[in-house]
Image (cartoon, rainbow over all chains, first blue to last red; front, side, top):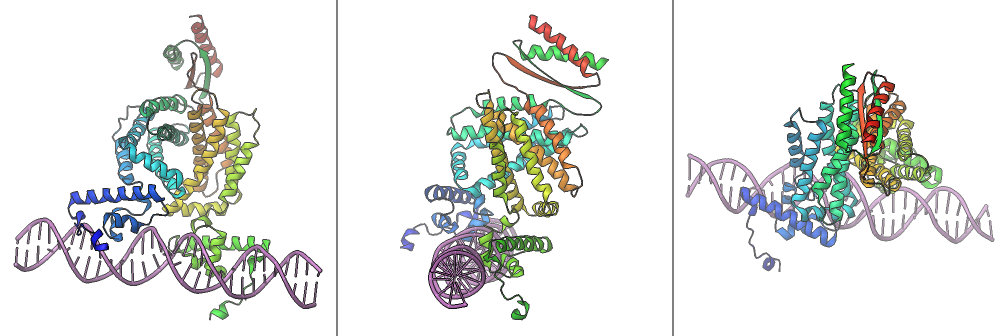
Length: 243
Length: 243
DNA sequence: AATCCTAGCGGCACTCCGTGCCACAGGTAA
DNA sequence: TTACCTGTGGCACGGAGTGCCGCTAGGATT
């Protein structure tokens, strides 16, 4: 019986570099299928490797843990984000750079919709996976905060601003991503993220400190376009700076 | 040897309600001591229960996992936060209610400084504990977001605002808490949290939506007096209204 | 005070995750 | 062909967490 089922006589897929990629992918696919079919906790690593036809030990050579198979290339993505931020133009507004990076993260999800949706379903049902995902999101937030701390260095309350702004960007990203996932991948997440980031920039992006300098917050409702209002106010501010 | 060491002839501490509390506390203390002395992963549950003198099985009757002993009454604290928000006065500003709740959470840490500091040291060194803490913090954030969604219901971008505001409050809280922990419990965390929350309120708290009317928020740092700034801006606004 | 009753404990056995170790196969280079 | 040498399978092990069961201490009942 076992011999008959093992009609594939141990192809040793993982020997070549290409075979390694294939095996890794095969393990991930088998795992997600089993998780979806019978639940995450109810699925053992042994069942996964039996489907693929490799040893249990091999699984842990490709993934550091059973959980990791759900978030396969998280490390690479984080380093990608780090590199993008490190290469950011310093003349660009800090929040703009972080916003672009958040858009990159969103693209990572959008690039593989079915996988993202499967993972979403899993993380919704399995608490431990949800926690792992939250922790992984926090990595992005830390990277954002570090970058913003660097850019806000010297400003009053720079560290606080950096922490708040980073979390706001992540919250906006997550909000848009959640809507997209809940909709089953229908909504135009890119546009919504752009709008959400604009919202964040409009709120936490503008400076607010507390030194001998005063902070003035003016709120006005008007039918004039924001651009008009902004230009007028900027004119006034230039005058003030000259005084 | 074992008999001599077990001079305490099985007191069965956990039988009464008071004994249960004592045993739970004894387990937590023993665990934290061992974690600090020889590391978290290097400490087995068996070692912990050997110190207290109970069976390994009993440990898992008091704590659902080895990690849980580091965050003992997290569930109760979350429910406390939920109750505080549910009892909040609806006339109060939404962010004010959430801010008060964040101050309550901070008080929970300040109430037991040495435990908080020990836990901080652990979570800094052990990745899995750090992840668990991040996940537990996220629970608070979810509660905040749910409350703000309720209060912002009907507003334009209400859900986004709720998500961003909740994460901003949590970020401010965490920032202050981290500073306090890193300082070894020296800084005046209460005052700093109040200032940080004011910062959050000044930024994400002010309205920003998109109806036919526009809401423009301008924040500027200047050495001109607030009165000067206000009069200038009011002048501009009068001009805008006439157009 | 003697007896019942039950909640809580100890301990055993088990599953499963994750890891160190080692023998071995299969591709590669000389 | 022969000598590596990387990746694999299998084994054994430790530790977390769980189900089960017998037992006992403490409280309730009379």
